[in-house]
Image (cartoon, rainbow, N blue to C red; front, side):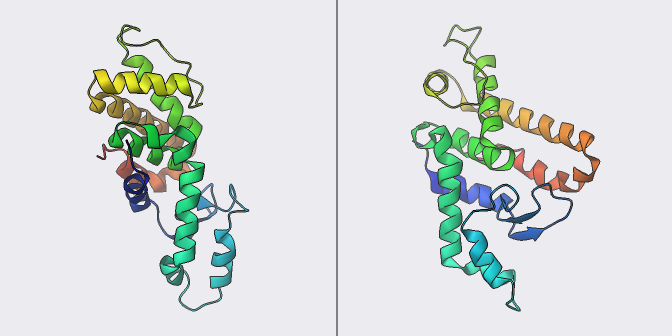
Length: 192
């Protein structure tokens, strides 16, 4: 079964430290947590307290309480939302987690559901599932069936293609976001 620490380490390799970029739709962020979308996250209190120190933002990198809060946040709000501890493939769990952190859980699960439907050999291996972005028993059953019958690399490639297409579409719609292209493209790779 998949292990959270491995997925977390990979994703945190993509997430920066503290940022307050006016072009970022999330606004002020720390390790990918946006104040705009998560204003009540308890880590903001620690960060706000550290802003007056001359070594800010470097000083918060080593704050053990903040590091613990961020890890718990990601496990509860992302990893656990798609039952990742029950996923057989570590690589698929890693990809889902990173996609969820960067694009939201609903979109990550939709990409998974779409890939599962495209790879079920016209419902020979398992029935199509609803592509609603909700991870439930039907999605887990389809994923388990797929995992026992097929090579995980095919499903990973579909999820990655969908991610890449989403990034390209987003940049075309919002050209100011092109400045993040290289960071996003680093995420569009198979991580095992």
